[in-house]
Image (tube, rainbow, N blue to C red; front, side, top):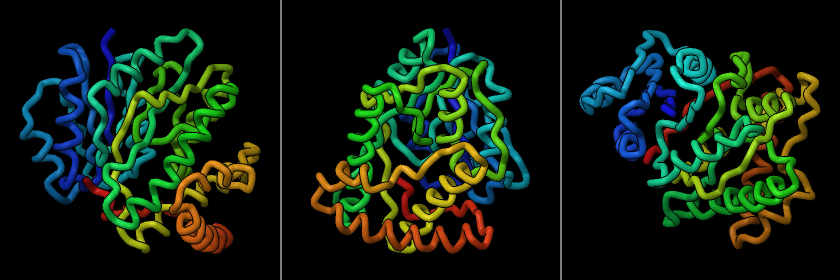
Length: 280
């Protein structure tokens, strides 16, 4: 069966061609690659068009509407039941799309996501962020075995179009929200660690705090909506992080991000700011 792959893009000239070049070999001639270029002011659109592949359908928006709006549009206009969402600044493994697609063939499976692997382990921030990603991987494996997993990560996600919700634009954690809603429809949300996406960690203090604070605010948004979603980074879950030698540094920075997030959330400063240092 044909599938749809979607990429939300905002000023992604540094990475989008590399991302697409790792996607196209995994698509059949019947598949489509939908790219929502929302308010791009750089070379994102010409770079995509220069690839010249008929499977690519680029939708240009003159004004930036945000990532959630782009995801909603992809979910609406996708031609196929199987939809795979990929961020514009990641590199997926050579079999990742096929693994996600096969996982979604399960009758009771509504959504799935892959494993995040650090693109490199060279800088201090590479190693600090790797502590977080490896810890979350171990946690997700445990949740998956218990049947309690639902918090999708947005780097590489698969959903069935018939189950995909339209998300309110105010939410910052669209991926987790999608997983929660599909889980509450009675469908399985599966963690698939064999489907790998390689992600470059943010490379400076400012971007790290900005990114993590945004995530914390996103969790509190969902909790405030009455969804009874608790923040994943709690004392019981620290055991997954502490396996890594850089865990202390990760937690110290995370506490700073928590403080910023608490202050911003208290004053209704809920925002989505792009970080630039994580572009591959």
